[in-house]
Image (cartoon, rainbow, N blue to C red; front, top):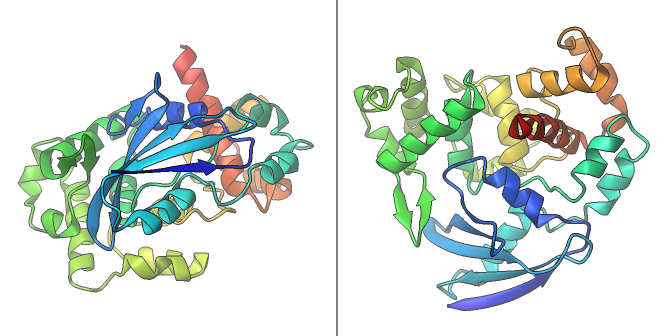
Length: 294
């Protein structure tokens, strides 16, 4: 086993990061020890890392632990991207201090966008979550992973595209997938194993190129593609205006009688660029906190 300590420039509130991760029942979060287990694929090999916070919001540091030295350097580089350790959050926070989102950013100061741990699981999760309330979406995703994925060192891995492509629609319907959602997940997996979709090259493509590539696939529309850009690739300037959560958050923020129109959302968000992804995250977080308090 290897251990590595990393210093990160503050503000960075890992406790709030853990809080949001814990909304997903598949995440192995330990609040007492401030740890999370991270399942990754490095060069197609599954590995599990443990991330533990040691510092505070203003002086954050982390202890990383893993089993194999072989993939250590690549795994750490991936972690830096996943947990947004590669870019200080101070500049982003400063950007919003004079904006309408000032109070939300103060309340959730140091909350980072945490990416899904690999591109395939991100897309599958987005498809499963389509048009479902968040609670059932997490339940359905958990059933899918625990039925067809695998566990290693206590962490859950999504089934691989090869495994999912071999599933029958009836197997997914048995865990309460709709027939259409089952077709979408299996079809996506078939596209990957047949070589029609290469997720590994997505990082090199522009936002529009990624969108154009993904929406050709049955079951992937603009909402799913935008969420992949945000939580898969970590693009900084995404604002999914079709997202109901963001619409509800804006309705509450501005005291609107109904959800904002696309035009109103566009007007609100102009001053938030080039960090629209963080505006999206903090708006989501504002209504998640309201739900937790009920």
